[in-house]
Length: 498
Image (cartoon, rainbow, N blue to C red; front, side, top):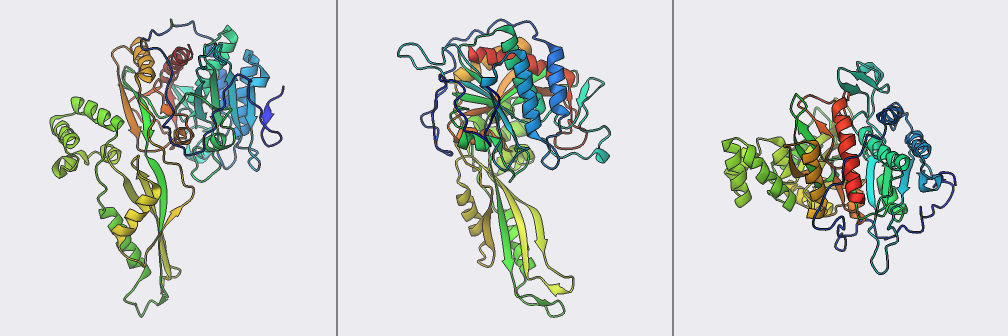
């Protein structure tokens, strides 16, 4: 059977044995549990390399396929990945090219590698699949701004340079390569492994493939849990990895528009009320509004680990704040670190302003965009109401702007999730510690978690102290980091898949 195209036909289940658990988008995860492994975990033996040359070819093809929103095609990249899997021996009937109506170049790929016990035995329920997620789209890149062509993969001085070399075609290539190695080697995992390569993660407000799959093809991507971008390791300048981190949950993204209106008039006769001044005072009120310090299980654990390696003043402040979140002096010390400040509360900041219509006229209106990163557990509408109260001026309207993303609770953190990661980290990165984090930004994990598939930012890949240019100029990833990550993640998927 040829690749499925959702714009033309209804998608059937990849195999009769794959369970379909349809949950509404945004449903709570109260009934979702991980069933990854028995209490004791022994990592499977390392396997011989399944073809680095093949992986490099796949990676180069994905990176050199322009997948920007303005002029690229995720559909071409998804087709390339599907062809790579078919050439490795995967059945075409298990490869789905999903193209939403009206979005011909924003295609997505779902690949299903069937597990041995997909149907379960006797009365025992089958273990659901492992889902591996990565986005194909990349941030815009102009040739005239870059030292090298952003859509030609260049290997130079131990680095790969190109747009998407790191974010996130490195992960997309690793996931596809993993299934290709399974197919070439005749691997029969105990549980089904799925890969979803999606489009639209990088552009807020554009079509989002992960959201669409969670809504329209929930059964096809059904899984016990998912691995996505967001985690990773840190290394020193020599390439020695010191930490590997699992992302567990993330803050929620929301934009609010502050707007004022005024009759205006000639600038030679100013009025006591002024649209620009009203807006300015509203923005200052937002800046001054003190969102309280909060912790989740994950952020509390991450801060405790940070305190153990920090210098004295920060370590003391973290310990004090963990004991008493209202400790203003401790918060002042912690807030000197922008990341820690953002990781312990909701933040809202003005990012755009528009006002006036002529240099010699009183403004008839003024608008500002307020971007909020909301701590888990708060509804977007509740934060809007909090901004309204903080501004305290009925002349200023506060409107929630689309798109409104779901706001699920953080996925559960369990030993079954962490044991394989801890074991394999010591095998691949001896001496490195394993930690957890909550992202201040956001990824497509939000859509999966909201749909009942708990999603985690996977460790494995790593970065050093150097600039990587992600989302900026001259994006790059160390060749060794990519190859290390490929080996680690292949073994991690084998461990979870049994």
